[in-house]
Length: 135
Image (cartoon, rainbow, N blue to C red; front, top):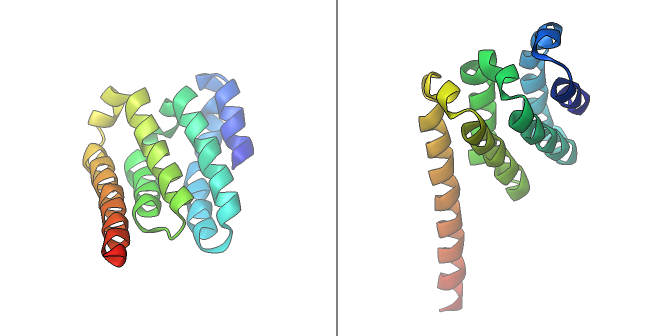
């Protein structure tokens, strides 16, 4: 997956066509890594973040079907805090990079907002628990 992300960054839009059919499998693999290999998942998320900065349009056909569901789920429910942060970073980087494109994707902005609120709520809950334990 990291190699695919690296390749997409350096090839032209016209050359990306054959790689598009790999995207559903990329997100399926990420879902599997979430339960089996957190360290590899972190590397994939870091690579994905770099790719969304430089080649966001590569993902446009799978934003609603794969990109948002998998990354939103990881950012809200994964037990590893780094995975949650990296997933949210990928989602937000896409918004920063291609806001007009994402306004056309049903539910994308709402999904990212929901993931952000969820992450903030987790922090508030953790802080509350720490304050409560000291009193």
